[in-house]
Structure formats: structure tokens, C-alpha cells
Length: 219
Ligand code: SAM
Image (cartoon, rainbow, N blue to C red; front, top):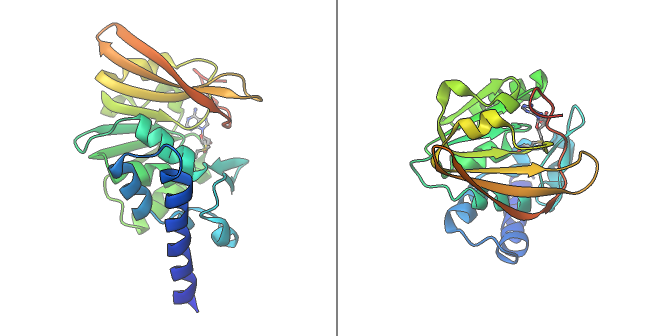
């Protein structure tokens, strides 16, 4: 029975990849491979197994969500990761996006402000064998200076503006992807490239809707 169930989920993962990723604008083979390797069902509440490969966010407790698979793939692709990159994620949540990033980057540092989510994600990632991810509990609007600079930074909650500490912790030639805008309506996903010590270029990517980034340099 259990085997049948798992097989069913494998088929749904393939459908998700075909319809929601390849069928849209996700074309980076490394992103597709990562999305194929990470079992999203292991990151959603048990009673939601059946919904693990639907293309929408799901509740993970504490009024927070695991992001829609397409958005995880889109943001990962926008980071233009390579296998030697060190990546910082702000907003660990379930740990799913960190797991996806870890299949491409050399190391992933992820920060979550809520104790219960940080603890659950840390344990889950350890049990699943992701050994290149470090989870930190704290205010991610301040980044994680101990491991800076980062080649890529992704923020999975929406900010009033790009937090300065994240710009400071971005390596030259690094990419930062973050939703910016009001808390309740549509926000804009932006990508900031650090071109030089004091030179940054910002591009608007698309409209998105995320939970608020709460902290000293957030809401
Ligand atoms: N990346 C997550 C995943 O794969 O499950 C989804 C993240 S959820 C949309 C946003 C997360 O950002 C929530 O878990 C929330 O607690 C967290 N968050 C909000 N403000 C934060 C802050 N200042 N520092 C760290 N995490 C924060």
C-alpha cells in the first residue's frame, strides 16, 4: 500500500515538472534536476501528502507557508547558481527551498525567525541527509554575517525595501532575489546584481505574493 502511495507521488512529481515547470519558463537543467530530486511530500504536513505536487503554497503552521513549487523553481533559476556557489536563504520555513538550493550550490545557509519552524526544518533536513545546509534561528533581515559573503541570496518573504545588510553580505558578481512591496497586495520580485564594491543593478522580474519579512530591516 505504502509503495503504491510513494509511486503515485513520484508520478505526480513528474507531472508537476512537465506541466508547471517545463510547461512554463523553467528551463535550467540544474533547477529541473533539483526539483526532481527533492521529495516535497517530506516537507508538507502529513495530512497534506496528497497535495504535495499541486502548484500552490500549503500551510506549515505558525501562519506560514511552503511556497508554490513553480515559485521555488523560478527563484532558484533567477539566482543563476553554479556548483561552487555559497547561498544564503532568508525564511527557511519547511526547509524545502533550502533543500532544492542545496542540490545545486556547494553550501546553503538558511535563517528562520520562528523557533518551531527552524527546529523542525533542521531536524527534517538532517533526517533526509542534506549535509550541506546550515539552519540558523534569528532575524534574517540582518543576514548571517558569520558566513558572508554569499554568491547568491534569496529571501522568501516580502520586504518593504531591500535590507542593507543583505546587500553588504552579497559577494561582488553575486545575485540577490527578493520580493519587495506592500504586505497585503501584490509585491514585485526583484533581482539585484552586485557589479562592484559600490555598484548594484536592480531588475524587476514579476509580480508575486509572499508573507511579510518581519524584523529590524523588514516590517
Ligand atoms: N522557503 C520556505 C519553504 O521552502 O518552506 C517558505 C518560506 S515562508 C513563505 C516565509 C518564511 O519567512 C516563514 O517561515 C517566516 O517565518 C520567515 N520569516 C519572516 N521574516 C523573517 C526574518 N526576518 N528572518 C527569517 N525568517 C523570516
